[in-house]
Image (cartoon, rainbow over all chains, first blue to last red):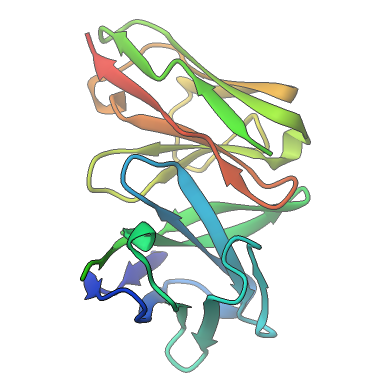
Length: 121
Length: 106
């Protein structure tokens, strides 16, 4: 069965970086993009970017351009999301999702369980 | 594209019907609108994609409709397991999400 399993909760100080992993299984890793989104407390989900594991192409939201890097490791079928220059407003639950291409974009048919990142001095 | 969902909270008794709205600030292709269900502490679950297509394994009491800027998720007879937060997602122009509608037990 398709599974996306994310790494555990993280606590970072302002200005630091965090790297969250999303380990996939149960399907061909190269066939689907992996998207990343986050949800701050009391806020709506916010899309961050995606990666095409087949060719390593990435696309990022302008809101995070320059601070976020999405990568993948084909040997472990894992995607990573690294966010740098952390500030308190980055405190959120970060999700990965498997993207299914439909229309002009992709919806997510499977999601990771979420990773809480807390930024606090 | 900003997605605005209404109502913020919907209080219903099991067996009643639910109608949830998602309004877009600009026109969205009907192929590019999805709905998800989320329960506390759980990952979101895909219900509907392409505005009206039920995802695999989703009961037929869930249906989606709409076009342009107005989309609707309908639950024909709410069951106990349906009480959760529902949010819409457009992937027509970049990606944005609605703020969610909480379906709670009356």
